[in-house]
Picture (cartoon, rainbow, N blue to C red):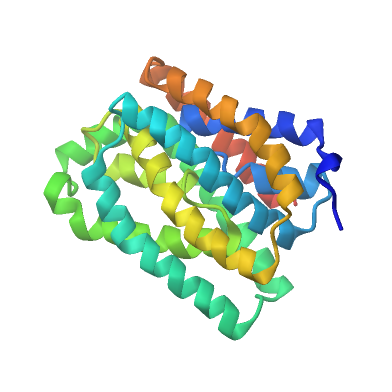
Length: 262
């Protein structure tokens, strides 16, 4: 049995770096940590996904607390997302239990699709001001009119996160920018981080049930990510959109390319 004395400082450093990115951009809990665990540390993909989900839940719980304290969480949008994502996550976990694990070929197709989506998202994020102007000019649903699209977005994210641990931050932030163009980017990020907490807990609990979580690895990652996400969350409310936007795009582009090359 693995001992807690096998705490790895390299895992803690990786957790700290990802924690800063999570707090600063809302992205990284699943999009970066799972590839890091698999490609850099050689962790089994099943264990990486399961461990990462609980890592993301606990890390983003700290981040959402900081964002909530700094009033950068829109709880109205949060409730809409959760209305779609939590039932979808529960059904996805039950489906995985009923049908068994997805095949290797299907898993590769999901990774390829997500990689392409992340690259497109990175490009779109760079042009966020133009997208916001387009949304306002063409009256893309905003505010109360975005109720059903937001619930549908939550459902899509719930399925994606339950299967691959990716999607809550990378896909959610950009879609919310289009649905709520009047909200500041820092508020979009804070809302996305808060929403990821219950979602990752639900999906992670399912993977824990399958035995796909390494508790020692989880503790090592959290030792670095908790202070990291606090620092990132504090910086997010001060950093202007013109700095957050290219930082977010760079993270998404990096993850997308890594997925396509994996």
